[in-house]
Length: 137
Image (cartoon, rainbow, N blue to C red):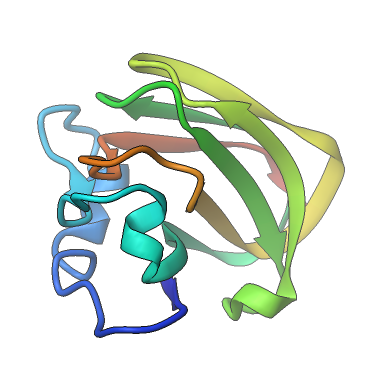
């Protein structure tokens, strides 16, 4: 998923989104590299939407990524439209693995791991694995 402010789509983001849940930490989803800060002022952010198949209570997500030092959000919604996603948690990405706790036990069918556009020049968003923790709604 992307939210453009101007320019054209990042063709890289639609390649291999399934890598974030394939169980292989060597595979990944990524954006292209942006030479200037804030995704070149072309987008408000990038991320991967996971369809849980039915509504679930989400308590946290565990993220594996080779990038660090940038904000990453957990958003949950009843539809996959960005506007329908509620901010449920935020952390600063850390190289390796880390968790984003949901602020409350949030319910939704769609889980978005979202890199905001507050990123430095030369940044490439990249995710290896995402695990959603919770229970059926």
